[in-house]
Amino acid sequence: MKHRVPGYLAFLLFFFPLAALSQDGAIKLAEGVYAIKGPGAAMNTGFVVGDRGVFVFACDLPDYDRRIRAIRSVAGGKPIRFVANGHHAGDDTMCNHLFAEQGGIVVGSRELARQLLPYWPKRVQQELKQGKVKPEYLERKKVEMAMPAIIFDDKITLDLGSHVAELISLGKTHTPDTTVVWLPKEKILFVADLLFVELHPTADDRSDVGNWQRVLKNLASMSPASVVPGHGAFTPGNGAKPLLEQDRYFETMRAGIKAMKDAGKSVEEIKKGLQAELGEFAKWPRERAIPATAEQVYRELSGK
Image 1 (cartoon, rainbow, N blue to C red):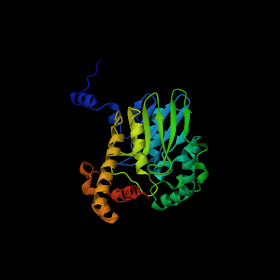
Image 2: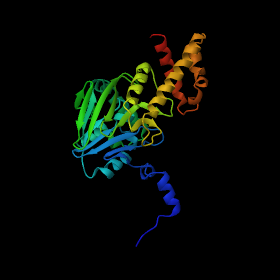
Image 3: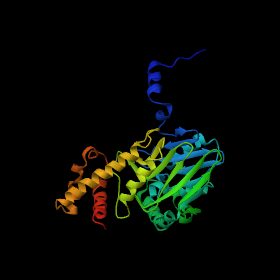
Image 4: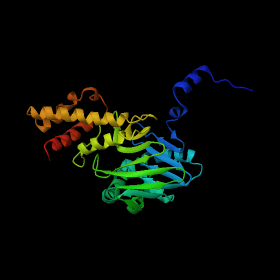
């Protein structure tokens, strides 16, 4: 007996692929390659299910339960074998120890390890105080469990059998320990906080916005099919467009700051008045990030 798809459902399936209808779970980007959208504009996760196990990149602890369910729903019983992070921030690294308890090996750059060691215990106390995660996920846990067990300098390749994932340390951009993941066969990038899509990105005195822009352009030149950002809107097949758009955002900000600086405006005046100079980007959410980013770009323009 044949079953017909109702007209309205056929319309939805035609214009919105099945992956786009399952945003609460694993979004399939290619065979064995998935993304998980964070709630709101929170950290997104990328992961790969290979013949030899699962590789997970970035995880926000308050949303851990949903994310681990999404991973297991498509992993076919394969274990989590490797875990990596875009940088040391808590919304990226605070699931490391839970994956390690399941046998996952944390892989990270030397700079990530240096940043994470003093940061992680402080973040644990903050998370416990806020009470947004299950206490048992953090109580009596040691920083060593979250630290990289395999450390690399510039690049390392993880062989999952059916898939290869290249971890590339990019140095100082958003923070000094930025790492991205490139899947060369599928042409997919996981970039964590290197990319804020349709959101004002955050920079501060730990950042190098000039290098950040160079990295964005270099990654765009690799012609990725999909880029999974750290925060913001994500659509499978988005390609290099969001990378180039963020570069253009920074260039617009840089031009506005230079003009205001040349006109004799102080850094405080620039921080307060810059949003109006950002044109099409002015209405993006997270405007609270503008002052700190503006101050860092001002420092770089001043040669500091």
